[in-house]
Image 1 (cartoon, rainbow, N blue to C red):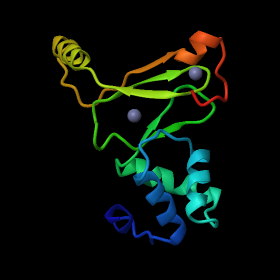
Image 2 (image 1 turned 30 degrees about the vertical axis):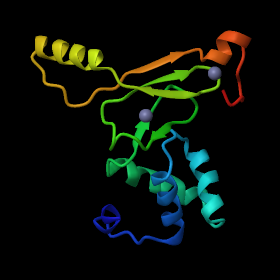
Image 3 (image 1 turned 90 degrees about the vertical axis):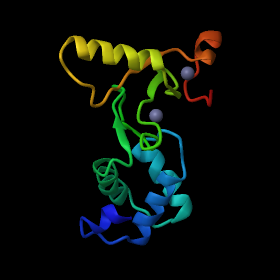
Image 4 (image 1 turned 180 degrees about the vertical axis):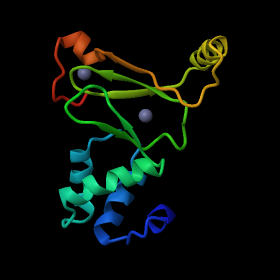
Length: 144
Ligand SMILES: [Zn+2]
Ligand SMILES: [Zn+2]
């Protein structure tokens, strides 16, 4: 937890529960979801600590903040391992799927080179209808 030390922050039991939770999931989550999961490990985890810890995790590059234009932001714990992945999200149930595409990477390189840039980061976010939504016309609040 060297990023905490570098900020002179103590690794409290609450923070440890939050950070352990983040390191043990590959799912994209909201702050409220993280709060719920962390409380399963440690009942005393407070909403305030979750909201204070999340910016530390994003600043340290361990977690990436994603804005899909929804009410709450999502957080992605997978960028350290898969820095090039993109996302498609269901506009209704907010199911998020990751994908990687070499074609896309080539295209980004091509476009950047043509415009005289080099690629530093990329993010592609597609909003769509998941399979349940397509089949049933609804998927709200369903695990689909
Ligand atoms: Zn992701
Ligand atoms: Zn859906």
